[in-house]
Amino acid sequence: LDRLAAQHAGFVQTLRDLGSEVVELEPVPGLPDAVFVYDPVFIGPSGSIELQAAKEARKGEGAHLIAGLESAGVPTIGRLVGDATADAGDMYWMDEDTVAIGRSYRTNQDAVDQVRGILAADGVKVEVFDLPHDLGPEYCLHLMSTISPVREDLAVVYEKLAPVAMLQSLARRGIEWVVVDDEEYVTLGCNILAVAPGVVVMGGRNVRTADKLRERGVEVHTFDSRESDKGEGGPTCMTRPIHRG
Image (cartoon, rainbow, N blue to C red; front, side, top):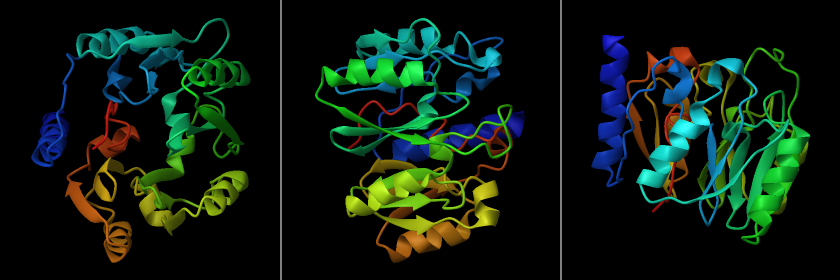
């Protein structure tokens, strides 16, 4: 636990050293997964959308994170209701006005419909991609387990689990990708955080993926993620980006 806390502090310091403003929230007793702040809320152009977790152990995280975001000056523009369930790990921006949503064991059709309706008010479109069964409903496969954006024309992708329709959509947009291999997929090499276009933070064990990114002109910064990797959450999972440089 001490190593985990120290490595997390090192990650936060790396972000600050890169010029990012970091808002740290207090720990939430009884909700250990709350450290993965990407999932309970999705940020649209006008503010936050509070999601509802399908995983029982994560229910309640959204309300805590929304309170923290509102304290930081981010308004709430919508909330999922009824039977809709979603994790933001199934959502990412494909371009300035298009959000990709992965339909999965965590994110259902009700959630897709509600998020689409909320984002439509900001002129944002939604593209939906189905995720494979992989290891089943108890294992957390998010859409962003298979892709992380790097800059407008580049991403990292684990092709074996990536939806074919998503890869085709990337190609139509002229977005190329660096392929993450099997070994570095396991160490979350596909989970990287872009703090600005072409400037990324990633776990230090993913040397081959980092080298491929540098060959593409990407500025790569690493941190010791050996303990946080055990929770199957990388630097994207541990941040809720409000605004990118």
